[in-house]
Amino acid sequence: MTVLRLILADQLSESITSLQGINKKRDTIMLCEVMEEASCVPHHPKKIAFLFSAMRHFAAELESSGLRVRYVKLNDSKNTGSFTGELKRAVQELKPSNVVVTEPGEYRLLEMMKAWQKTFDIPVEILPDKRFLATHAEFAAWVKDKKQLRMEFFYREMRRKYGLLIEPGDKPTGGEWNYDKENRKPPKSGMTVPLRMSHQKSIITNEVLTLVKERFSHHFGTLEPFQYAVTRKQALMELEHFATHLLPNFGDYQDAMVAGEPYLYHSLISSYLNAGLLLPLEICQQAEVAYRTGKAPLNAVEGFIRQVLGWREYIRGIYWHLMPEYGERNSLDATRPLPEFYWGAPTHMFCMAESVRHTRDHAYSHHIQRLMVTGNFALLTGLDVKAVQTWYLAVYSDAYEWVEMPNTLGMALFGDGGVVASKPYAASGKYIHRMSNYCEKCKYDPDEMTGEKACPFNALYWDFLVRNEDKFRGNQRMPYVFSTWDKFTPEKKRAIRTQAALSLQKMAEGTL
Ligand code: FAD
Ligand code: DLZ
Ligand code: SF4
Image (cartoon, rainbow, N blue to C red; front, side, top):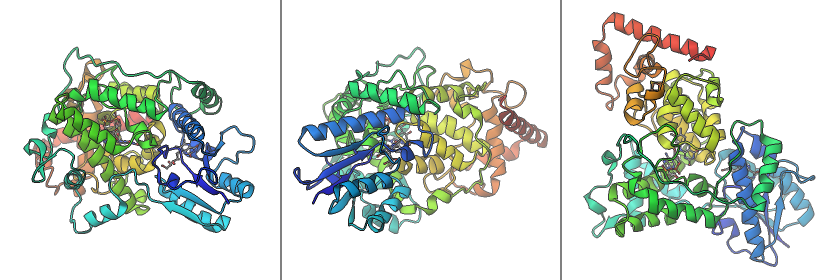
């Protein structure tokens, strides 16, 4: 009897556990494009096209190595539209002895998989996802004796575990564990960045683009031009391109934002990594080689490795450690409706319009745009945490719940009560002004607090802090914030709060 091995769209790695021990003659691998997943949130058309094309290419590679693949396309006439429906159909037709699957990246799907054994009355084996660098058990053991969770200490253990940037005696390369203080340079004027790769579209990709155009053009986001890598070979070329041309400056300009430059020196690997076309350890090792061979400086390489080995694994650990309760948190009671400009309606705030434009056109924006522009605005205005999470999950081609949720709810919105971030990433227009050239192009003035021309972020920043004073006044990491507020005259305080109320009103009316 055949063993049915199910592979999800974010499990496109030959080394995935569900393929281990496969019997070429006996077993069947199944991949399916299902409407339930493609429309549970309005995924960006580029994200859907990327995933479907990568799935189809992966299936073709498996077939050409002699494996038997059952591939269900979205528009196959018998497609039932859900994983459970497709599994039912396959079980009826193939009568497998058992089903093998690697654990998914979303709690909802894990629950669904756990129910399959009962539904189909055959064994369903859910294997660990060994592509990640920390296991659930390791993370739980690390959390156990900690009063407060901090990524930095988890990251140091991961550096030691994998010997990345580690010298004899378990010492960090260069003497420091973290070079973040060197990685906050504002953009240089007239700065130009190397061109990015663009991949030729295959017949498979063109077919997928036609399908996505037909079925998902009502979703927010531009489908074409489509230049994503869709195979492991192409994704490895992206990694090589980054390591050679961009990594040397990655550290310095990691937090910078420049109008018309969506990517700067960022790697653009998250979509490939999260879908399985690249593996985290090979990425970190390639970055270390760039340092050891003198091709990139330590601040860049350490900063990059920290993102992949530290933040990415830490975020995943938090998700699985605290779900499902984590997903229900809303510690700042944020419930305001998401304004239409998140979906492309006009706004006078250049920073918001530009970040949303990059998102619409590329299904991408870099970390500081996500955190300090769209995330910061949502935090300051108290936007509904579920609506904001839906937005982030839908619009980015690298978004899956395990990574999107702790970043959005925890890091950007402080909605988890301070698990991911020890203080809110709240900032006024001054931060955006310092780290970008956006304000030069804006109708608003980052130096004004009140009045027609005042940057909305300024008054909204204080309004946010005062609204949540009971939660933040005692925060040790915000020592001067409230003492500054306390020094303002009653008139100034009133004017700031009136200005914030006006901005919130304009936001609701669609005129901000
Ligand atoms: P680079 O800046 O080049 O960084 C290198 C790699 O480090 C990334 O590819 C990614 O794999 C990893 N990384 C960096 N920061 C993080 C982080 N905070 N969490 C996890 N991995 C990290 N990342 C996702 O992969 N999927 C998401 O859905 C996602 N949602 C986010 C939502 C918000 C509100 C915020 C603030 C961040 C989110 N991130 C998410 C993290 C980060 O913004 C992206 O990983 C990054 O922008 C991807 O672009 P890049 O590959 O060019 O990254
Ligand atoms: C995100 C996504 C989309 C849009 N479509 C599919 C699909 O048709 N088939 C599939 O196997 N997976 C899809 N996915 C990814 C799953 O939703 C993903 O496995 C979960 O989000 C867990 O990370
Ligand atoms: Fe954004 Fe304010 Fe700068 Fe305009 S002035 S770009 S709203 S920070």
